[in-house]
Every structure is written in structure tokens, then in C-alpha cells.
Figure 1 (cartoon, rainbow, N blue to C red):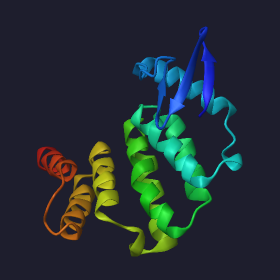
Figure 2 (cartoon, rainbow, N blue to C red):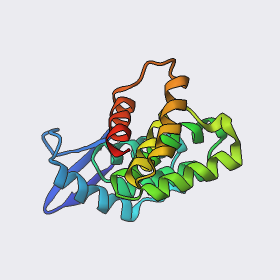
Figure 3 (cartoon, rainbow, N blue to C red):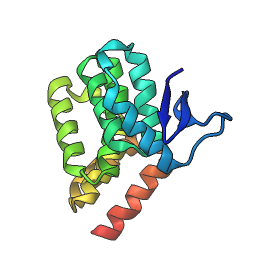
Length: 171
């Protein structure tokens, strides 16, 4: 278990979140400070890829999106197709959360060119439809929405339903 000394206290990384000496999950502001400190010293090369994924997921969960992007990008750069396919929606949602929808769109486009349509799934399309809404490209968003809806058998997730409302409102 990773521990960090910060402001005269000791914190431990318990799964995806930092806890204090009593085992209590610390507030998000402290999570962010500890994530920053931890990321300044971490060497992804020295840990197993599954641990990097776990770390990235924890960073995303604690809203340290910039650090999560760094970790997810390492995973994407050093993994097989199946892992990359599961990482793409995660990293694109981090790009959206940090206000970079164009980076999400570019990453999707690059992945699609490199791997073809097989890299596309309804979760990824939902994220990319959101990105297109963010940049005001509602026709592209609708295309992604339609494809995601078809891929999910017409059973739209809450996220996909919200994208549809944005598309209708934006047109």
C-alpha cells in the first residue's frame, strides 16, 4: 500500500482513494493534492499495467482528470487492442471533463483510422457524441448517437439519453 507524508499527516492509497491514519477517505481537495504529489514521483514503467489502470481509474474517480489522462495514455501506448478499446472511453471522458472535447474527437479519429470500426463501441460513441455537442457539431453528434443507440439494441443509457436531449436542444 502506497503511503505519502503530507502536511504532517500520513495518508495511504486504499484501492482508488486516499485514506487518513484512521482509514477514513479524505475530502476531494486533499485527494487532489495527494494525487498531484503521487503523480510527480510515479514511474509507470515500474508497475504492472493493471495497476496503472487501477491508478488511472482512481484518479478519474477523484476528479484528478489531468493525471488520469497521463496514466490512461501510458496504458494506451503500452497495451493490446482489447485493453485500448476499454481505455478509449475513459480517457475521452477525462478530456471532456477538462474542457478539451477536440482532443477526445481527435483521439477517436486516430483510433478509428488505426484499428477500423472494430474499435468503436456504444460507450465510446456516447462520449464522442458528447464531444461533438460540446463543439457545436450537432449533426456529427446525432450520427454518433444513432450508431450508439443501434449498437446498444435501442436501450439507451442515461448518458446517451442526455446526449440526445442536448442534440435536440442544440439544433
